[in-house]
Amino acid sequence: MNMNNLVKICLHQIKVNKLKLLISLPGFITIVLIFILPSIVDNQNVQLHNYSELLNLYKNQNHQLDSSNLVIIILTDIKLLNYLLTMTFVIPLFLTIDLIVKEKEERTIENLFSLPLTDIEILLGKTLVSLISTIFIVWFLYFVTLIITYLYDYKFLMVHMVEGKWLFSVFMLIPAISYLINVVAITISCLVNKYQTSQFIAVFVLFPFMVFFVLVSDGTLIFYNSYFLLLFLFTLFASVIFTIISLKLFNREKILIRF
Amino acid sequence: MELTLSNVDKYINQKKILTDINFSISNGETVGLIGPNGAGKTTLLRMLATLYKPNNGTVTYNQRDIFVTVNNFRSTIGYLPEDSGLYNKLSALENLSFYTSFFNNITEKSILQMFKEFEIDPTKKVGTFSRGTKQKLLFIKSIIHNPDILILDEPFNVLDPSARIKMKISLKSFQETKKIIIFSSHILSDLEQLCDRFIFLKEGKIILDIKKTLNDSFESLNLEALYSEIMK
Image (cartoon, rainbow over all chains, first blue to last red; front, side, top):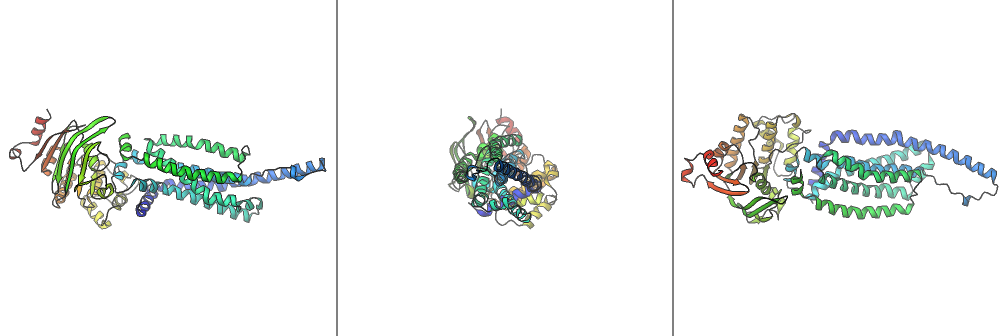
C-alpha cells in the first residue's frame, strides 16, 4: 500500500466533497454545542433538584435511612457519551455511503479504476476523510465540553469525563467504531447503484443503533463499564471481518458490469 | 514490446461476449477496432485496460500477464473510456491534476500546454463544459503521461470538426513515438486516416484482421465497402 496514493485520494475527496464537508462538519458541532449539551445539563439540574427533594422526603418519612439501599443512577455523562457515539455512526454513514455510488452515477468510476491504484488504496483513501472528520469532531466536542463544564462549574459532569471509561471511549472505542462504520458504508456503496438506495440502506443500518443508544440514554438499558471493553473488542473483530468482506466485494469488474 | 491476446474468451452475466480472440500488436502499430454495436469492442478495450479479466486465455504485454503485475501495467497505459465522466464540481486543471498525480513526470506546465492546444479554460468548472470539451479533456488525460499503450474507446464521439482535427493531429504526433495505439470508432474515415491495421469484430469474434501495408488490394478498397461486405 502506497501512503502517497492514500493521501492523494483523500485530498481529492476533500476537494470533491468540499461543500458537503463545509456544511456538515460545523453543523454536527453546532447541533451538539447549542442544542444537545445545554439540554442535558439543564435536564440534569432539574433531576438533581428532584433527587434532593426525594431524598429529603425519604429521610423525613424514614429516619432509619440506609444509603446503601438507595441506588440512584445518574445518566448525565452516559447521555452525552451516547450522543458522541451516535455521531460516530451518523457522520461516517453520511459522508462515506455515497462515495463509490457517486462515482458510478457521475460515470467517473471507469477512469478511477484504470489508474495504477490497488483496491485497498481506493477503499481506504476514500474512507480516510470521513474517518478523520469523525474523530476530529468527537475529540473537538470532547475538549470543548470539558472546557465548558470547567468554566460553568458543572463538576458532576466533568468528573465523569476524565474517568477511564470516557477516556477509553473517546480515544479508543470511537475511532474503532468509526473505522468499522466507514468500512460498512463503503461496502454498501460498492453494492448499490443509486444514491437514494445507499441513503435508504444507511437509515436501515443506523436505526437499531439509534434505538440502542436512546434506550441506554433513557436508562431502560444499563450499559455497565465492562460493556465498553466488550464493545471495543467486538468492534475490532468486526472491523477485521468487514475489511476482508469489503475487499472481496470490491470487484472492479462486477461494479462496472452492474452499473 | 508486444501486446498479445491468446485464446481469450469473456463471459458477462453468463453471456459470451468475446470468443477465442487472438492477436498481437507490436510497438508502432495503430489498430482500429471495427464492428457494429454489441460486437464486443468495449469489452475488449476494457480488458486491455485491466478492468475485465478474461474467463479463458491470457493477455500479455512483453510476455508478462498483465493481470499479474496489474498496477505496473496500469501505469503504462492511457485509457479513454466510452461515455465516461469527470468531476463536475472541480475545474479542468483540478481534474487533470488528480488523474495525472499517479503518473511520473507530469508538470502543471505540460497540462496547461495541452489545455492551450485544445483551447480549454483550466480554471472553469467541468460541469459547465459541453460534452465535446469534456471528451477533449478525457483525451488529454489519456495521452498526457506518454503511455506505452494508448486505448481509446470511441474517442471522436461528440466532437466538433475542429476538435476532431486537433485530436487527429495529436494522435499523429503520438504515433511518431512508436507506441501501441488501439481504438474503436464508428467513423470509418477517421480509422482509415489513422490506422495501419484493422480488426473487424462481429458477435464477439474476430472476422478479419487486416494490415494496410501488407494488403495490396487494400489501397483500392474503401473501408466502408469492406465493412459492408464482411458484415453481411
